[in-house]
Image (cartoon, rainbow, N blue to C red; front, side, top):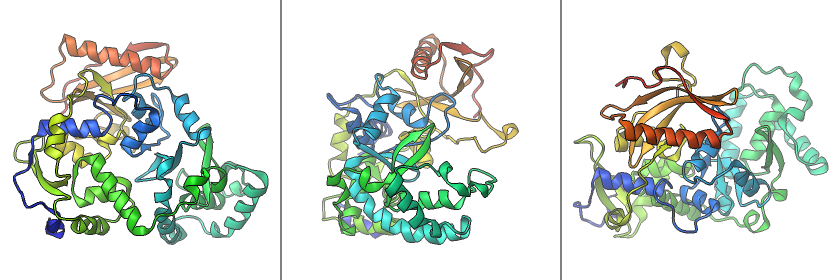
Length: 406
């Protein structure tokens, strides 16, 4: 940590227990008790973004993420904020995400950087000819309105997989990633593109912060949402700053603006020296305990986005196995983590099928006992998920409670 040693307050004794660190981290990620009066946009601002994913074995990831934090949440609320109120927009963080519209000006740096990065990468990776489509596509949209990739005639170039885009689709994605286009809505989860100036409200469209201001916003915002982090974790949060830029930001902070804090991991002896705001220990002490019920989390939940951090902090090793051949999977195709209080207690394999929510298997974590009270809390959450995803009934396969794998 020598690269940002100048940012420390000079006190190596700051210490966060694992319990305090978990409680603070859960609160920062919207899984504590919600602040009074916080609306859905406020929640997403607190999270920073919500990842979008197409898989819907139960419900799509962005809806699962928001539904696990707000019992009253329904998918049409997000649609209204995206497509009518324009309080949110879709773009890229570490992956496709839903982002507060107030953050849009800080994406201009990303647009500029992606223009050269994607052009160089996609010339090698995508089919040739996408750059020649730019003017044609922009003119068509300007004159005729929003489009989807499937509307273009060069679908005659047969695609051999989800990764094999025809040139017009590549052009659309490039123009979106670099800011000329924006997603105005989705139809059947397919992106519908329009000119950015017809989607992004004027106050956000015309403001353009400088590079230094954007990097300061990105690093400070990441630290405030993570609570405690290394420079690499700050850079990875939005994937706007590079690791070198995050290290430089940490080193440039005035004396006392950041401190080094020892944070306990889930396993004894796995403490880490991380950066935090000077009042981090006091903030952790004031943070209330999270609700004690059980919650099903999306595999793409912000709590688990950084798999290594989640394993270190919660002792929970999680991997998505959708690309693993069935015979080699440890658990299942798309298995949901279970959170109880400040502890990840297991994982559950379930899917919506023929009007039912079918629970195939549940694996408790080692040391977790599935007593009567805990099973009742799990079934209560599954009843909620049944209603949330529009299923008519909840069904358990025979032998659905399995032995702990590890």
